[in-house]
Image 1 (cartoon, rainbow, N blue to C red):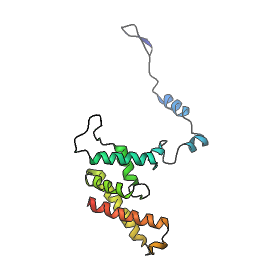
Image 2: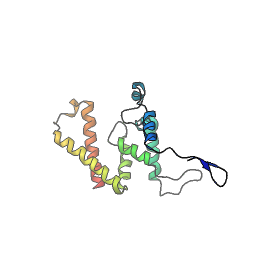
Image 3: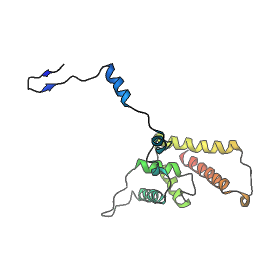
Image 4: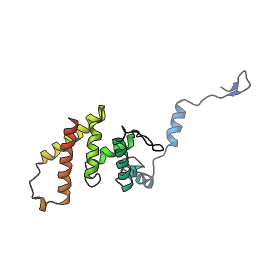
Length: 170
């Protein structure tokens, strides 16, 4: 229905029928193999944000150090600590890896976890319990520490960290 309104402007009818839906679907095309392989399997094109690069490790360390100092008066020119969801997610994702989060940083992470509330706290506790259950279910064989492979040592550290996290959140 095309006509003029009382102000002299032309009104146009929107194309909203079945035909419009079919045309819209026809306009969509499937990605080519090259386009599909360009996007990671997780579906996030910014997956580099999640990898443990030295810069991200340093940023996480700075974030946690600022969190520790949040109660102290802030010096002029220095920003006050602010919660950053992306940093928290990164920390929670990599906290079990001793090669990413060192021992000193992990002690700060444990303090940080102690202050968590709500669903995040419950989710992290369940994740720690899952790590513990998986390790005890596998029934890790007692191998002398000198004969353990790097993978076994990292798995043992992950289990120890899971116990510590579960203890803090219990």
